[in-house]
Length: 273
View (cartoon, rainbow, N blue to C red):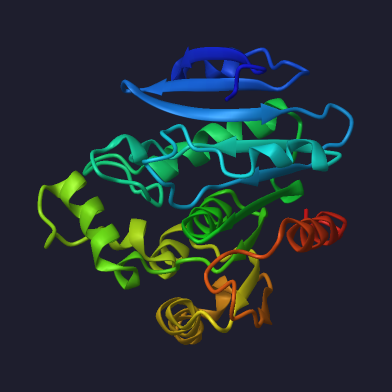
């Protein structure tokens, strides 16, 4: 699937010395024998980046690494980066939210690798937009929280893993803790807790189909309620909520055309340096 990409495999301690290619390339960074994989499409002229996260995948049709929307890479006049979630390599996990293993928060490691890559690409964090839907929306907000001054555009995202469907979150618990009744780490599974841990609420563009009752009742409304209880000093950026109605689509994200339009509107906005 990614045969057109030049492949680079390195250890984490070699990342600072990585020589970036001008053409698209596949990067695998070994961190304690865990592969953190990226598709990188550099644009040396336009110093902006759009970073794409992935939601659940069908294991009957695909296998990791998963790079949702990688076919969009040529739609933008800027650098695009796609990251795989190594949590997907755990048994029976087809949606991992960057959770990782018991002692390793994979999303945090992804954020540290991305910071180095952005610096090497000479792209400021304020010129970086994270995009994802569903589980990719969760990781997009999480990464934007950890990579300060960046923005996140999310569509029908999860906010609280514990509010997601029991079967899927149970698979994650069983893979990580060997028990479907285990408790998840709140800082890895609840974005409100992550905001507090990182002392940061990023600028978020939150698009939600109001006909998807599960998303609205289990994620959007509790998210708004929890935000009213959070320390107002953390609320330095705007959260824009875009509500739309499409009964046929439900949890399915907006069309490519609609999404590209919003992404291009956001990346054309002045950045907050």
